[in-house]
Length: 133
Image (cartoon, rainbow, N blue to C red; front, side, top):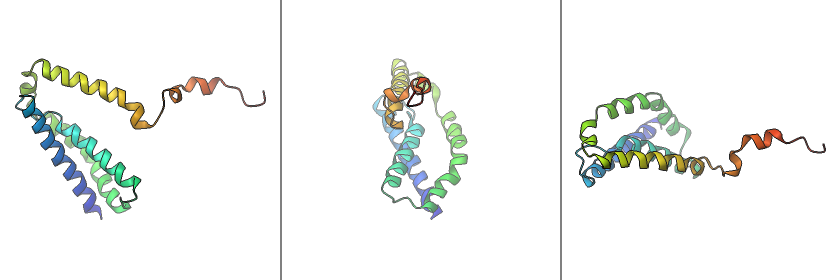
C-alpha cells in the first residue's frame, strides 16, 4: 500500500533526526548534527535492503516515489532552519565533521555504485578496436 511507503519515509526521517540530535549532544553542540542526511541514507539503505529481498511491493514503492518529488525541497527547508550558528560555535569539531563527511562520501562512491577502480576508465574501452582487427 502507498501508506507503507510514506510510513517508511517518516520513520527514516524520525530516526535520522533522533540520531542527529544524539550526535550533536555527544559532541557538545546544541544542534542536530546531520540528522536529515542520516535520514536520507537510512531511506536509501532500507529500501535497497527490502528491494533485494523482494519485500518492497510496487504500491509501497509508489508511496516513496510520491513523496520523493517533494522530499528534497522539504529536507532543504528543514536543514536551513537548523541552528547553523550553534554548529559553527563548535569550532574545529564542526569543520572536522564536515571534512570527514565529504572524504568518506567520496571514498564510498565506488563501493555504493558497485564499480571497481579498473572499471572507472571509459577511455580504455573507447580506444580498443573491434575483435579480429
